Image 1 (cartoon, rainbow, N blue to C red):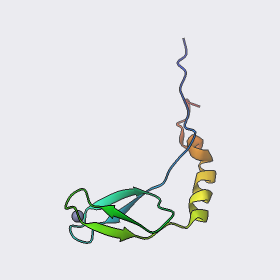
Image 2: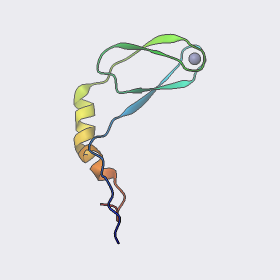
Image 3: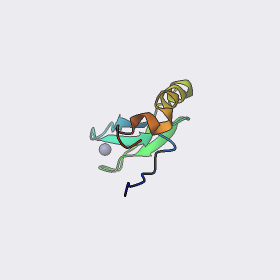
Image 4: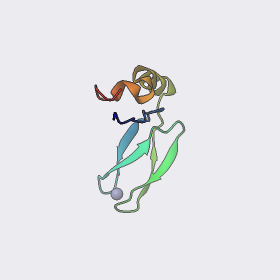
Length: 75
Ligand SMILES: [Zn+2]
């Protein structure tokens, strides 16, 4: 019997911002506004530059909202 796999319905872009205090690369899902994040290593809070929404929209479209990344044979 063939297994059924659920396919992705959306994709997000995870960006990594280096902490100004300790250098740890802190992940943030592409922020649309200027925002603050907290380093989970040293606790430093810092401002991160927002993304260009057009660029994110382009990537999501190009990746067919994640479907284009599904390995061959699982689609
Ligand atoms: Zn830090």
